Image (tube, rainbow, N blue to C red; front, side, top):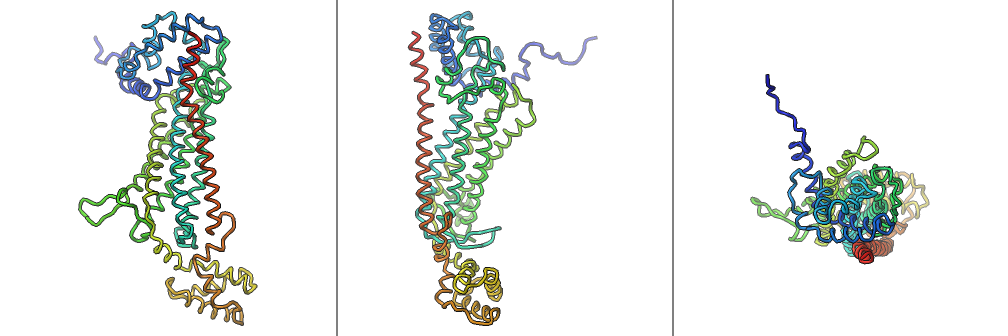
Length: 497
């Protein structure tokens, strides 16, 4: 009796496998890897020839075949299941042009394993440099804005409550410092990414006398991934990069959240110009700072996707596995896409910020924010311990009806409180005590390295500017190498003809 169950396909690929996996991987390969794959083919051919593994005549035939490949056709081909992936599709096209016997020699001493990881690293290093270029623009925007607000006093918060006066430049300098760390982390990731795994072959190298340093130089790498097992099975180069992006996304997200809070009418510390706000379809008075909201969500997406990459790699075997290969790569590039959008938009929004200096000044002068300096003044002028000075000022604040009292009122209550606790009047003159309550004085006396004093912050910004210029020179040098390696390959090809 015939079975009613559908027959399981025995010919590769099964339709459902083709539909759910191979079609997507082929399209991703066309989008991300076609150009670097061809660069790898050229570089490998040059190396095989220099090592006398293939003859010059064979190399010339292979190079002519690679030159004649119809790149437009390959880039737009629809996956039909007749080959497994883009690599085999290109190989078949090359065989059609120069014959399988000669074309097959190009695959001596390599595997799709080391080819794939080389592709991933070549693509990833470019993504890192693109993001670093966006960070350079953000850094410049932060420096420009900070330089305008060296004396713009504002309240600093701890535990979301007003704490002490600072300046907007000092606050922005805090963001500049973590951005500079983000740049360093991405530079370090780049150094580990831009190493050549080609020559690892399947996992144990080859018995042919290849020279891995040759392909490394031709492809713009700065060294080797030396151990062949690690070259194919290692994933930390990717995890390190994702960690750097995720760290940047969290820090920038916290910064953006502050900006959004300050843009509320309740705070009214800043607004964006009309190019970065949207109105409501029903409420004509609305000016919504949506650009900053888009920064926040893109950062959150980048963070979430970076976590997803790391989660995918977690608890997988140490070796050649699909979990960290073709199916994962598009998520990596989407992470970078969203991070880049966020960083670029944030840089643009910062240039569009309109700061309400008066509102910031008023907030900095209220809520007893300068009480630390008042206590410090009692220590300096009266010779008291800070513990006792703290007690006098704390009791003064408790005797105030609210945080909106005038400085004159605070000094009067302070003098009464000190008399009660010390049994004698303060030696400090009233003008000295009033000066201690000034927000601008508060920041000006804090000249310690890292503090908010305008001169201190100005020196910090000068150093940041120098560091930013150095980072841009570093970026330019790496971009030059990546832009120039195809010409290096072309020159090497000419020497074989």
